[in-house]
Image (cartoon, rainbow, N blue to C red):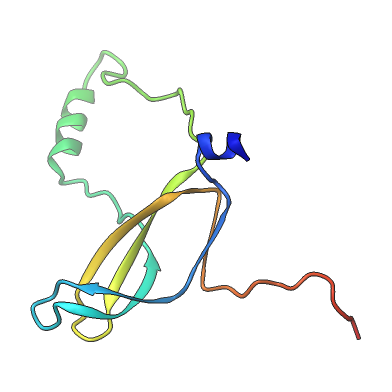
Length: 116
């Protein structure tokens, strides 16, 4: 257990689909019920400044100009939750710890017990 505390708990996380938390929206400014979803990054734009700069640098001869990352060390990602207020529809993001398995509001399956 001590080794698990040092490396950080990377077990399965089960988060409820609704959660009462503070809403910063102008209408609310109090604790309200929020709908919880998992954040997913959008499609990268070709018109973003970094992408335009990268593409222009890559043009012509000379091979790969920027470093390509190969030394991947992490086995987990930090989970970002997207909270949407049910009253005023204001959205906010909340980062939780690293975990290998993430679930949104799933029931635990009981082990054992009578089987009919």
